[in-house]
Amino acid sequence: MFKKEKILLGFSIFMFISFIGFSYLGSAQTSVAMLDSFYTDEIIEIDGVLSENEYDLNLTTTYTIYDYANQANQKEVFMYSSYNDTHLFIGISVDDNNPTAAVSLFFRTNDTVDYFVNISTMSIAENNDIKGVYYLNFTTDAFTTSFLPEQDTNVGGTVDVEGACWTRSNGYDFEMKILLNSSDTNGHDISLEVNDEIDFFIYYESDVNYFQVKSTDVVEEYGILFLAPPSSAIPSYSSVLVIVSILGVSALLVLKNRRK
Ligand SMILES: [Ca+2]
Ligand SMILES: [Ca+2]
Image (cartoon, rainbow, N blue to C red):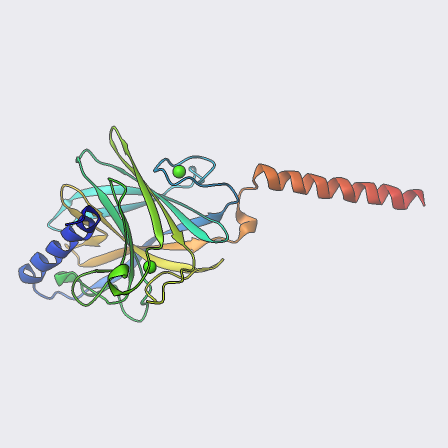
């Protein structure tokens, strides 16, 4: 088996075990936090290192993920995001001592139904986009089907994500670069422009599988990614220079006109 396929292996097994282990309980879903993505003209290096010039590290959005079988076993996921004219960048940081880890984001590209058509069997809706990174830097671009996730490339599609992981002494930092609009004709990829929002659901594979799902009260939590308009971005050094130049030229013109 290719290692990159391992990202989805745990999920497949988990879904199968869940399918035979739980009865239908109904479901509810709730958004828990907005992840603002800020426009940047900086070069973002996909190396797993989340730098201040790549993301606004002061604006962390925190999500809780749960071990479905033992809700007391939780982790916090810290997320950051930027975008430019072509790509979305996402930084994900998790404190974790497990020797292996993988993170996947399930983007809701099929918004006609809930993610989980049956949360108690972890049965997910078809045609949602999955972008993932394994700690050894393998990425996956896949989509949900009525049973197991399928790689985009298995049905003639393209891989539209680059990813990297940085293993810290006490955890993992993941970084993903995703095309805002891919040329993938499958129609499973995200398609985003400024001011768009898209729901996402975190799946984290480590010592156990963690989801944004509270099995105790059968609630699925999810985040919302928002592409904030460029005006709300922190001005970069180059754009400050442009503003100073415009102000300088304007001042000269005013002075020139006054002298006439
Ligand atoms: Ca980086
Ligand atoms: Ca794709």
